[in-house]
Amino acid sequence: MASAIQSQPTIATLEEYEALPEDIRAEVFDGQMYYMASPSEIHQTISTELTTILNIYIKSKKGSCKVFHAPFDVKLDDTPLTIVQPDLMIVCDKDKLDGKRCNGAPDFIIEIISPSNPADDYVRKLYYYKNYGVREYWIIDPRRKTVTVNYFEKNMLNIQYSFDSTIKVNIYDDLLINISEIADLLNF
View (spheres, rainbow, N blue to C red):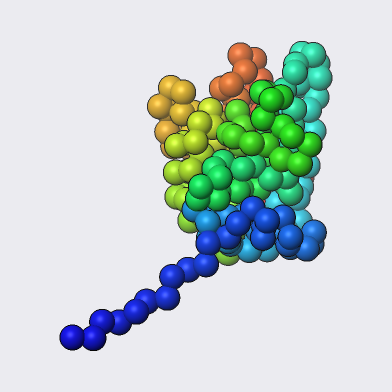
């Protein structure tokens, strides 16, 4: 009896990933490479405003954590290779930084939904971020005008806020972000 041979997907290596041209954005999940589109104007506005808020807060507290925005690699696993490029992240353990990337889970991640692939942030990245030790993960959805906060340390999952909310960053005692001020800049 003849059996069908199915082709196996190609497993990406770190060397292949690092050899990508600088203008190509990609992530790798369990060795499978996924290419990413360039962010929109709304995406960039939200990212810039949040980066500024987070940086000002950390500097005002003389904190040791660092804020990074995409494209900046986070290697979650070597075998199989898993590398993500969160839209925004806070890394508090400086030993995870090697000059090229963050090796291990950041403390805080924000992903801004791309209209072309919302399931990526709501399902796939939620799974990886929770299982690799991210403490808090926000999903910002400009189309739905919602922010979903996942605070894994307290198992508070899927707390959803509207764009007219002020939201506490749970990894800090006193950081509140007024999302409505950012939404006002978007000219919906």
